[in-house]
Length: 521
Image 1: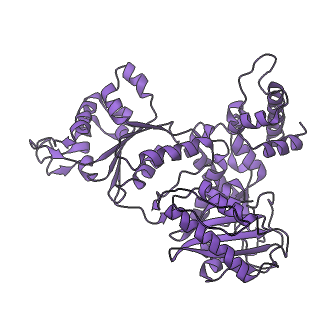
Image 2 (image 1 turned 60 degrees about the vertical axis):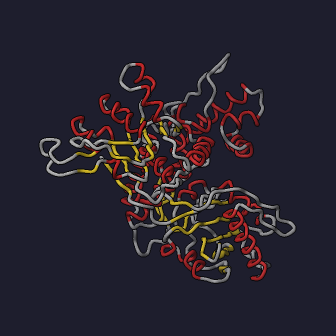
């Protein structure tokens, strides 16, 4: 019913997103012949990819433990950049994660370096070239020089100043926030909806405005609240979470405001309420739409004057609390039906935030799946878990009525099923366990037209019709049939304009061209 996160979370990470850090890798690509590169931020004992080139989408959700990845451990332990021999026997952390290389990585060149900012270890830069010998001509001095430029770029981003770069590398200038405390999980995703949400959080988090967090069940409203608190000036004070739906009506006042001894039958001692526990920090009222009307009036009074009064106590007490509220309900409809106070709605909703559904987030499902796979891998103590191309297609095609929470449960079950079929054996040559469509256990709703956020067609007009899928096809064939039908419809609507179709599909034009060629459209 109530959760208190006392003080800051363990570990910090920069607020730099991929938008800020990707140009550093783009600049390196002008002078180094790599096929894949990553900037990994060290957070506690893990390495977290913040920006990547040439790696699959789910990599952003992974967290690498150096003790499980000897190449990364050696890079962290080395004071100078390292280049691994092309035939190095150490397993590569990106096996199964290089874009276009679903199998074990062949013999290839790999190098990297530990990165420092302000004299502290920031993380790692890793570079991979699929052509053996691609890095042979790069001297240690040259590599060290480029690593120094990356470190300078990271330092400049932290200090909000331009970074000087040598000829041939474009300048990288971005204004970003200082490092902040990070919740246990993060707001992953590259979709426009998630970028907009992060921008809104960055705007309102430093203020003391009340925030009303709106969204369906399972979208991550509590995670948004944690992010708001972590990025606020109250980050070092408690974040107190209380589920209003679980509050018994006769105890709600005591839970929120506390009570004096003897105020109720059974009140044998003074008790602090959640407002006092959150003093100086943040209080999240989850499922605020379930709060009884009588308590809504008392809550409004606290929000208006910043004072609480414990039952059984005549003396009001001042509280300094930032209030966040979350709900999956349509509060405007509840107001119209007399179930929610309009004055409380406007007091709580000084800055409303809409958390997008998973259906609105397109290919973010792959990054989230990668994060959940990494969690399950550590929880089970098993080999790396990787999605097959068909499994990725199935995840992208699913409706996700349960949003991120449903995805987490699907991935957890799939990991268990896959491990049961492929138990770990000391002599097994495979470096990971593949998760395929049969492990996901997704129902027939996977192929619903509403399930394609990256290929969402406009309502049929004129002579067009909704794409249909023959029932006798297997999953892969049915998915391709749906995509083929949708693309033909979209090309007809846009008179063959591939740029317009790419915009409607929410994908890059080059990716659309490859998809058209693969499907023979």
